[in-house]
Length: 115
Image (cartoon, rainbow, N blue to C red; front, side, top):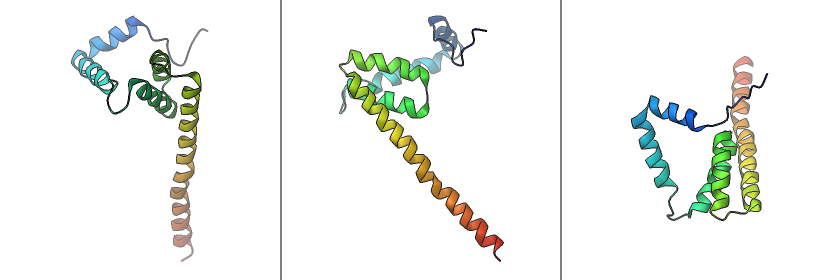
């Protein structure tokens, strides 16, 4: 069976999604174009950030879209990989930081059951 978890993005797939909510997709496209324009951050940096965020949110389509865009804007492979490592550290750090929630719940459970 030739089945992939994430179907390959095709023009037809994109057009179908757009046709199901045409007003929404136009707003989305305008938003995206606006966000990625040069501003306080240049386009290259914004695409590098997008790649890092896409690794944290685990969006394969975003990774595939923003990686070549970052390269076209002058990003190096080393810059992209370093951003991915920053994303990995942030995701791992968040898991550890959220451990405080589990410790808090363990403390509450212990206090409740020691009475």
